[in-house]
Image: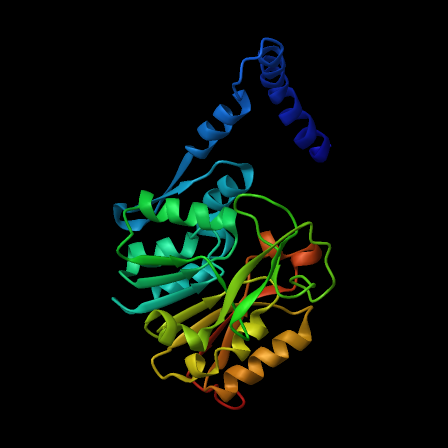
Length: 294
């Protein structure tokens, strides 16, 4: 029933617009009514109220971006708690920033210098609009490319073209669970090793690093050994899937080689507790070696 409603409602709403478009065509009027509707949707905004009278503004032109804003405070409470623990005026790398939820939160609440990495053309657009809307252009620098184990161009693939979308891939043909996926849109983008960024772009090393890229987290780690070993890096939050154990095991091994140790992993059961996403958890690593037997 839900799928029927999702299909029927847009069709009903678009019917009069398509009719006017058809009539305009009959009279050779070159005007795109649907384009005006799309432009209006792009102006749609949602406000998320934070503590201390602060707020974040997000452009929410579709259901998914509105959902991201609506659930911002409840979907990943562990990520917000992690950011709340940042020192003031530190450096935060947000790898797989999407539309900028956590980049904006860190810049707004912790006065971090944020470097956001997002190769999706749809999400890069919204990420930069959200930065501008919140007057955080001096705090956040958005890079429209991917990170991986080597530097160079590769194929970026979408499972679905959607503003605010996820479940994409860079340079591989599998998805967030390590299984082959049917990607329907492809284009080439540049990717870089994290360890190359400082020399190429003069980006300072992170004090805090978040990685959420739906499947190639271990490839990013392979290209980030120097970054991960840098003592300036205090903590990493990385999204890993318990149902992709070979990836998770490699991440833990690389991180331990670099002096980072798993402290906890959790998720909000209301969003990840069932179906295909049940194995997805945010893992937090720090330089504190766990006590044996604790």
